[in-house]
Amino acid sequence: MPHTVALGEPTVGEEELQAVARVFASGWLSGAGPTCREFEEKFAVSAGTAHALATSNCGSALHLGLSVLGAGAGDEVIVGDYTFPATGHSVMWTGATPVFADIRPDIWTVDPAAVEAAITPRTVGILAVDVFGQSADYDELRAIADKHGLWLMEDAACSAGASYRGRAAGSLADVATFSFHGRKGITAGEGGALTTDDSELADHARKLHTYGIAPALSREGSTDLPIPSFDEAGYNYRLSDVAAGIMLAQLERLPHLVARRGEIAAAYAQRLAAVDGVHAPVALDDRVHPWQSYVVTLDPGIDRGAVVHHMRGNGVQCNFGTYASHVQPVYGFSGSLPISADLFTRHLAIPMHANLTEEDVDRVVEVLTDAVAGAR
Image (cartoon, rainbow, N blue to C red; front, side, top):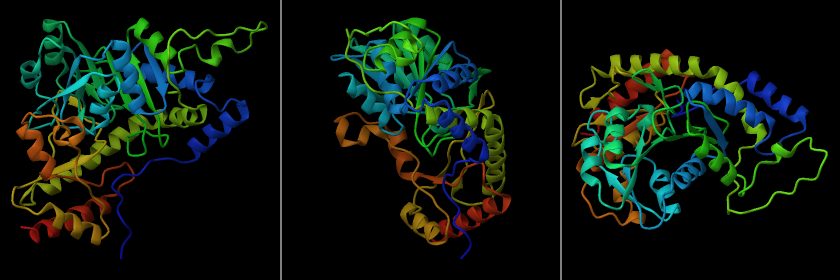
């Protein structure tokens, strides 16, 4: 059998190994050190913001962002429904309640009209999700937030390298958060980041991410004995300098990786146009899609389980898209969000990463075509 075509695969090599070697040589491997600061400075430039904070993962960045924005017990936060449940979980971690809003049927990001309809006197903010990397409708969401006196937050977990109407993902809301998990476009295996233009929010997040005190780097080189005082309970949400070194190398690769995945997405779209019952994803002209995942929509009546069984059995990895969060029992959500619920049952993620070859793309489409034909 030919080699397995992986659903996702990092692009790493000698540059990342050299970066790790430099961190080893520095003697500072733990979190929030000089390599983290270098990465934060460069990532802030990439995201078009004044501040970036490297975190242990995107979940910790989400929690920090919501915490410094002030979400807490008794509050409601409107959340784009179609997302991995880390988004909704992070709201619950603050004591607030996630209120899920339905999505656009074309690009699957939260529908601004659904957001406005979900606002109550308890609503304090909007948490939009850039689904599979494509930005949500931030101009419309900002107008709604300003109208109702709410803050706006961007879950940009999949969005490194994306942009919306000429503005980089990460700069589109009061606070944004990124993931560097192994499936993401740039990765250190794990990790995340928080970005913002607000200096007070950035300083508070940095304090909370190191147990509630300034990181040790701020005391490095002192000839005195500064002893920090704890006046707020924080967390250990720091990224190690080892991972930050990898991320510096990955950040250098980012333009190439986004361009290559865009080429692969175009190749898929061309080939899938001839496949009955399978619909390619939509990429809008006013935003740059970084294609963290490539998710197709199957026609109703096609047995997705049978499609998956055939594809995996023929060496092509695949998976469902993401979650309709509102149907997850942990949330106890009673509303009906029909678009998200429907797509949750019909989406199929097929291989997408920068290492795919033209032959891989042809094989994926061939196997998918056969799978769909046998699954009607």
